[in-house]
Length: 445
Image (cartoon, rainbow, N blue to C red; front, side):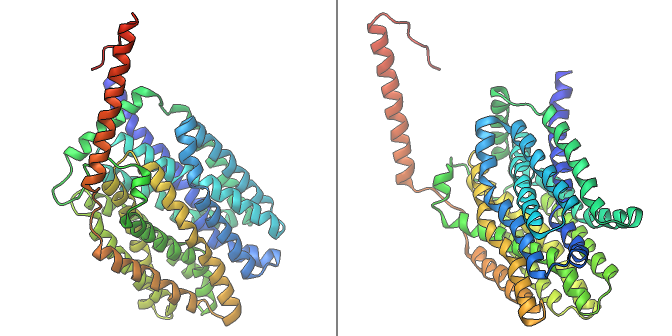
């Protein structure tokens, strides 16, 4: 029975966090871009305000990325997930009743903060603790989450089709999110036994890694990793794909309908791009076990460049297909590659804090929709924003090409070994002193 539980539990973790990622994706970044035109039209907003709300969603998601890491270390994953679920549901319910811009902004802040507490920060952390093949597990997780990008617009169309009301989209997502968060938290396991099991899995992952994939054997702390250029290059790749993805999700439908593309086609292209986004995560997750994620990252960043250009000139079916394929595959593969590369370069112990810091840096990407909406209001077109943002993944791609795996200096390793020896000597001296005073001495392995 215990053996069965040990086999089932990792898959429960993967599935439950994947479902939460699916729902939060469906209810935020992707579907909001489809609902926004109705909200702008019915409530009398301008696109600058609409874009700013989308930016607040991204900013709050980025700036709140470190608190979940702290809360996980301090109070555990269960409390973190429940806290995030409450915040998310509150945000979705505010969107259900929204009438004015300030309420919309508050809802975006709540949704972005809740995203950090239930999605990728706790999700990738828990999955890495349960699976040796983290690239493949991440691929499944990111894929199911990405499918939420397909489901989000479909939930909107269902809400409008059945209830003739876009607000029902937010109510449906709120109910599903509440159920998922409670079930996930109820069955999570925590404690010292789980920590020991995670250490065994991490050590086995290093020993069994494929020869073509670099996996560090050095022990890294978060502060040591933050002193390397490699961390910032990987973080820049994360910023680049989010900048392109968030901007496309928020502004592409408005842009395409303005240049004469029908609403159904524009929304369909967004769903197709989301499908490719999700599928590419699964494929790249499998490939990432045998091919260095660095190569995947270079290819995916190039696809983002091509996709943004295709969207900017998207007046033909060829250009529209280039946009959907480039952004879809580029987004999904970059997401997977940056996450796995971060873990491969710096190890699993430091990953929780590093991934959180990377998401904080990604806050910069959240200004994409606001600047894009502003450029649209000033110039009358979204095109210049798309062309401008294409430069970001291009620059990062060049930096990744020249990047090499980080290696801690021999001097730093020697100082660390010396510190360990001194600590051991002091502990031994303390034991001897206790023995001289007649106190029992602890036997150390």
